[in-house]
Image (tube, rainbow, N blue to C red; front, side):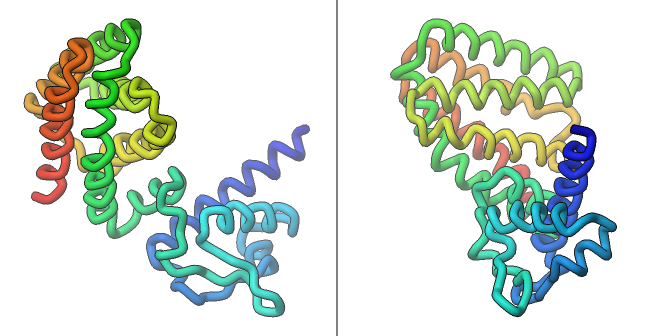
Length: 232
């Protein structure tokens, strides 16, 4: 059991390090790595190195080529919806560009998701969203940013799930990574903008009132505020 735990930590460390390096351009598309070089660099067994490579292959960052080695892929082959790849992009030199792309995705998806939630939410979900919006206002106004982000993630996850669309619900981890990354990389003010707090209130109230049009309108305000902040 202990050896398995050590191997898992080693694998995760290697895949995290290489993932960040590839996404940030330290290893260009077409560059070749080998299991032997990874073993030597990280001081791990061949099994741990191979497991790390499998993680990166699953995200589309590497592929194995017979008699050549491990080839770094171009960005168009990456699984850009993977929370891991999103996290690496948000930690890269092009973090702002990645945030803008992800915000554009949120504009396309979350506005419709908010309207759908207003049409389909349960009473329990409606009360939860109102409570979360009130909690976020309290935390935001008192500048408790870490707790605010935690509540924000729950708010958006609940909204995406409330519409009963499994495709929207599957994007909850993507949105969570974006919200966390915006804070982690200094793209979030220490005190959330009043407009953002008002928009969260508006979304929650519209969903509780079963008003899809207002839910969509307030969500458009919310994600547009994020996009405007990032484009400044």
